[in-house]
Length: 161
Image 1 (cartoon, rainbow, N blue to C red):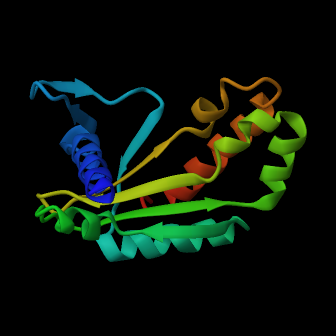
Image 2 (image 1 turned 90 degrees about the vertical axis):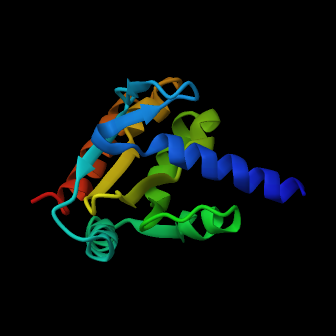
């Protein structure tokens, strides 16, 4: 029962997170702008191609794909049908080492994640949280945060050019 509740909460969060035009839908059904630390971009490719191009770009940047999650499957468990959805978790030990050596408390933040979602109109969106936002509460990581911001932006551009 506890895992079913977790799946329902996760599915609800995903549905609220992805709305057309980069908007989030609150419980009261009003639309609000996505937080400034979220980056939302439209892919020039279909869903499967977007996922594959992002993964290839991650590897081209000498990063490791840690996991790939299919939220679609979880949503189906609670009776919700969606178009394509994928979460891609990635990072590299060299960055983890820098975080660990600079501020051990920040080691909870990695890995980084892209979310790819096919919208009802067929457009494919890519969303991620800026690494600088995730690392901003921790002292000493400003340079690394900027470096990771540039890296994630470069990877995201692989599906927009």
